[in-house]
Image (cartoon, rainbow, N blue to C red; front, side, top):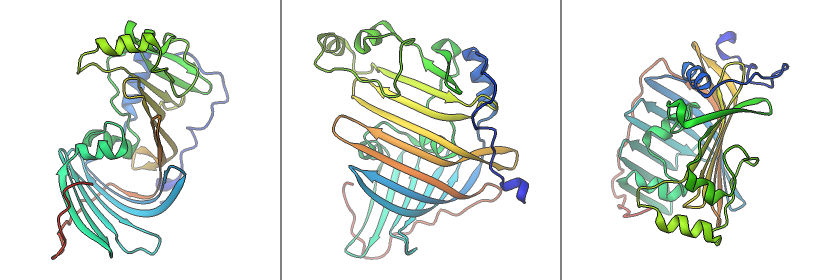
Length: 288
């Protein structure tokens, strides 16, 4: 039991200089350490920070791979105030707050609107177990470098990206890429973009011993927003490791939101029920 629950210390800083590895090498070794599951149950201590206001809560979370995410949220006293069910394309919620009881059911994209960044079902499941979000396995789309005590995979720039950022992908220094929307170069590029065009810089930091993901940063240069995800304190579950500490930060020019998750318990060797019954008399809400 002690061996199964110990925290992995191999994700700490390496004592020897890190050797440079190709993007292909990093991608292959990262893929071997992805967390795989069919069912998962979690106990979570969480804290959200929005515009400087902090709220703490506890959550019980259950997931079935590629199927559903079920969440029960309670404040410190342990009385359930929200129950949430997320599927591939929908989200349903029951609010049990005494003066604000209701239920909601709608498309999953409402979650992206609430968070201020694009997120889908697969991204949610990957985020909660420490797997990379949207990591393309095509090594030709990335270059690699050493950043301090970590390996770094960074998406290669296209010409229009360099015009907007002002530097190429070999001269990035900060976690957050800042562009000036009033710059004529930026405005010219944006005007010429098609609706389906994206200008997202994706970066992934891997620890050098086991190539586990420890940080991801995504900068959307069109929407002027960034997503920063950090993983720490890896814990063994069967023959795999998951991060028991997850930090999520979403920023745009007007606001910043943070969500800090401490996974206190994880079970992956049993099936779970996703009980979701709307109490009698609860009104339906049309939007969140």
